[in-house]
Length: 218
Ligand code: AP5
Image (cartoon, rainbow, N blue to C red; front, side, top):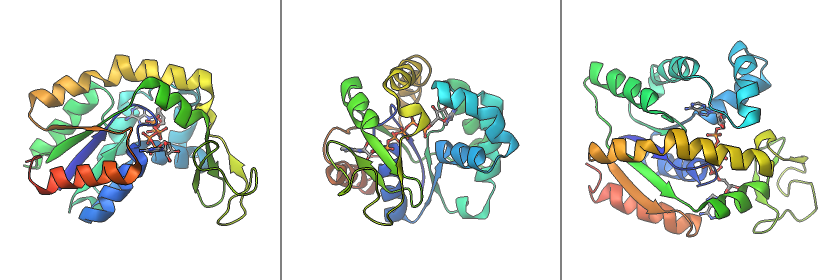
């Protein structure tokens, strides 16, 4: 199964793509995670991407296309994948289309998560992550037992550089301008499945799995 998950920042792409990937036994490929890893490793890609990411801007298409082509060429992506955070522009979508066509493959579905901007701001400005194990907390809906400390491994909780309110608003503006046009692009191809992602995590996953298993998405 080959899937894309699409949605604004904070819509739950990361959470849902991990769950769907596990359910269908396909690899989750997150361009945001790959970029953050490249920054942490001090890699050349990370050096080139960091400034864009910190400002809430999109990293240039040429860097992203190379990253995704390399990743999709790895063995674990042959059996299927769910792409989280790619494509984010029409030109990235066209590149992916060309790549899949060359290999005589097609997307099974594009899963779109719908969340209002106000919900995004609340989710992301209250998000904290463990610096050691990556566990995810929310100061309002899922606070740690001890402030600033991970319940699981006692690691220090940190805020993502791009989760300040100002940068969240900028990321949303970039999403509406550069990524939202993909909704019409994939709708025109008949592959778009849209879900209300303001419901609880499990309800959203169940709705996606049901739609994919019932063949609503080819
Ligand atoms: P990326 O890491 O992809 O960030 P993003 O799209 O801004 O999304 P987030 O990771 O913040 O949110 P998400 O939708 O994955 O939600 P999550 O599951 O984490 O990209 C970062 C940057 O990298 C970009 O700004 C750009 O600079 C660059 N980049 C990446 N890909 C690129 C590309 N293709 N082209 C160019 N540049 C690129 O959930 C968010 C929070 O909400 C969590 O705390 C979670 O627990 C909570 N939550 C999730 N679902 C629910 C729910 N149903 N109810 C309540 N809480 C929920």
